[in-house]
Image: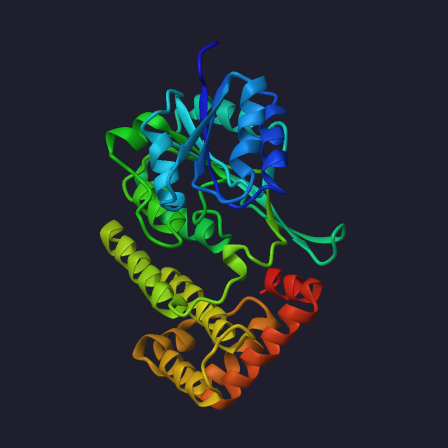
Length: 352
């Protein structure tokens, strides 16, 4: 095998209808000097077998079969085996454009970057073949030191570019020397990336869009009802606030960004409580919502946040009024639109 430039790591579980396209999108890459770890995390369907069939024909693909331990353990297993100069993390139900690895590798080498951040597409399917495409990206930028990056990181957070691993290329030595692994928790992407950016110095941002994040599966993690969503969002917000304290960056602009990010996610938690899969009674739902919108953190955030769209300004009104009844009604409307008209919901969410 030629010199391995990039180690690609993909956890695999319950994706037999999608994993073939994910693998083929890597095989179609214009950069060919890669190794590909497909980590079968104890899947119960044919996903692991499908990966094996590709590995039999392509020596660059290695399939690891392990007991189920979750995506974090699957990724961490492969991190310890990776030999590439850079690491890339792919989700097994998505796919990538052919020039993604080559373009990101070129930028990393050009700038001696520890991290390359790219744009991506959110493809929300409202029928089997029709979809609404949302583009997420920031302007090209090269941050040569931690100070430059930290001053501008909120712009990347604002565009949802720093939360996920699949729109990034990571310098392997930076990951390994700092012992950066995915924590064994639900929604492990965000805390992992927070640990990456905490002390990163050289970051390159490209406006190029390569990755297709697919919103389609009803059983996907992003579509499920979660009883602990509010607690997770509270935890995540605390992590982000602590990061900015560590960076010693504080300004009205940062305060507004943090407040707006927090209150927008509160709306997501409200929708989670009001959706059809939540088993709480109406009174219990109302009480949960009251707790969310009446906390000191929520009251402060709703005063500080400056929504960027008329739609979001409207969404915040019941929270500003501290009305649990109206907020619950709003959540029910959002849930109804989400379940009955995916296309409209995707457009509204994209324009928030």
